[in-house]
Image (cartoon, rainbow, N blue to C red; front, side):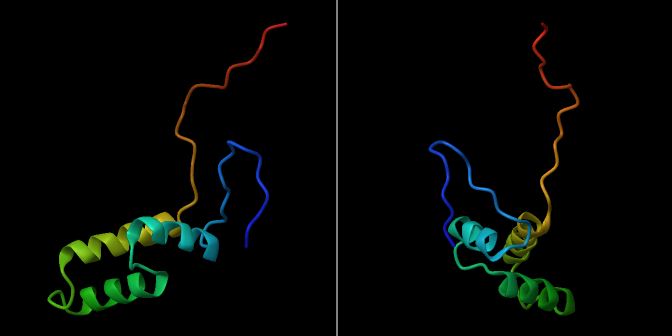
Length: 82
């Protein structure tokens, strides 16, 4: 679903949404939520079933999909003095 945005603004996706999953698939290629969950489950049951690199990619994909962004800056924002 496309939304109108101002020029130069970044898109905002909800954590775990299908839109965010589609956005992440541009960087992770063939990875999807179902495939990532399958890789992790099968790798835990039998480590020889999937290469470790695929396991890491699946973990990273799910972390990017399901983790909410948090601010890490400890400095307060700039305020104009008037």
